[in-house]
Length: 462
Image 1 (tube, rainbow, N blue to C red):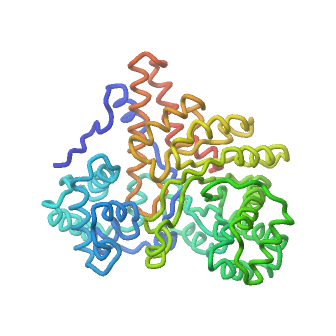
Image 2 (cartoon, helix red, strand yellow; image 1 turned 90 degrees about the vertical axis):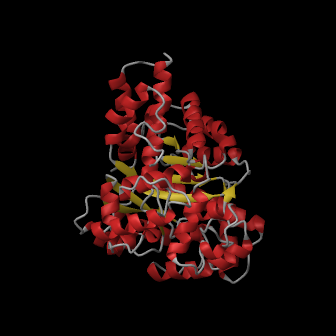
Image 3 (cartoon, rainbow, N blue to C red; image 1 turned 135 degrees about the vertical axis):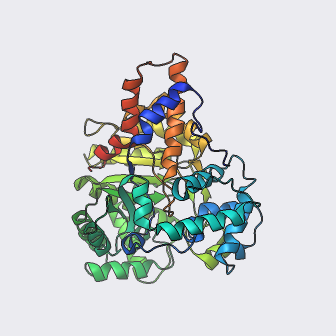
């Protein structure tokens, strides 16, 4: 039997009540994820547990690599079953890793399986889950609805096909799927296929010969996104760059469009201006910005060339760009063009620096207009979430917090919301029992409900 019990991560009676009476019953709004919308539209039945559990999940791939598993058993040519059995073997000793918890919860939530995951039980789990999939005809729709998900924001590049979302909206689903607008492929001017991306965007909008054309094209595409319900955008940067002049950014763009590679300094000039332009554009259309900072991407060149992007070779960056973030926000604020912004920080050493900066740019436009996003990516574990809550309550206002997301490509990731909710309830319950805050459980319970769902719904215009 699984070690996951009903009071998992709930270490006091008040936490148990907060979770069971308030948090656990709230729906889920997954306002940032990487689920493939075409898979949700097609809604095909899965063939086996590997397809749902391991395919495309680089969290699990990283864990297997850390154990010394040959890539053939991760992304290579070994059978689905061999890869699944190998993962179970690896997970059995991954004590303390969030996957050790998440995977066990996923088995229970989605396959009614409480067998403890390890090498000895791997065959039994494989057979159990595959039989369950066959009998219950498991599809993306059934997984999402079972998780009580009401809204999903996928992450979509500016030139992605939006007809998929129109078709999903016509389905009899109990949830909405809406794209968040992401211009990262247009931002990353130093990428090898950059001119190819510009060509795709040009074919959808207008001929792009300079920065003015590019700005018009992006605004045209943003309007198309808004037509299918978009209220949020994504920007991903290793660090925030100095805001440069439009003319200087234009010189870099024209150089690259002519077939020349930009220098590192020129790349920073373009990204500095482009970040500012995008956020100003989003403010004009009342689109919230989800700004992700602190990820050092594609560290392993050999594996990047072999497997491509987003395959588990990113890490936490140590670049400190807090002054540039301050100047960016200040310039936008001075021009009355600072949009609602959620800052996702991947380096926990920067929690307090960023939290205190965000407090300098709040307004009555929204509760927590400038948000400190949840513990993200490498930090969405027990330790990371607890530190996040400590820093958030110490220098911010927890009642305005818009709560958790999955940031995942896996349809089985929704228990991560309840993982967070348990940690949240335990954190507040502990303070309540120590006499450090009100003991009015109904009052606190309402705040918990807001953090779990209501705040995000209001903040992101749903």
